[in-house]
Image (cartoon, rainbow, N blue to C red; front, top):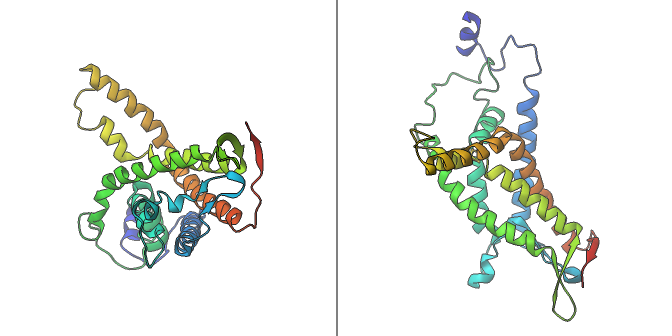
Length: 265
Ligand code: FES
């Protein structure tokens, strides 16, 4: 105990008596988040190849949904993806799990438990600017849920293909499955959110005192099951959303053929 206190008293960056490979996890997080950040910024910047309509398909990249520029007839000097992406970005950046991981991986604050930090810092928690802004997570959850509804619509729409006569037919293409898996992963992440747990089960003194309270307790239990694997959902959904954009982008560019498994006519 006395030794761990002296380590926290800043013997120097990385100084520790830990013998395990504590640095592997923050390094992987650093690589994973950096790779996603670079790819998503590049993809959003392009402003094209976000929609694949070959052979009657309608696959829309999750980075570009909803298509607000179509609704409002916007002519922007920049890609309209930037009008949308601040929502999922803010949602993830303020997520309790991501906060822990990127504080460690990017700021080494701390790099890991019982490991020396780069320099002496006073810990203020998240009570001061700018970190106090992390408290708006619940509002990002509300906004991200709206975006998620559009993504569900896009995923369902991806199972309908337009014939030459203009009729829609149910079918399955690889892109349909890619979009479905992506939206399931995003839902698993979003609906395991601590803000949702608080929304459905918070501010209750008694879970068994009324029918409503008992119903809320049940929902809280379900949401909490997803929350147990929140870290896994966070990573799976992060990569699924990037790979879905990549798949649609490659199809739209003609680099990758979308394999159509079947269509019911
Ligand atoms: S706590 Fe992670 S999304 Fe809300």
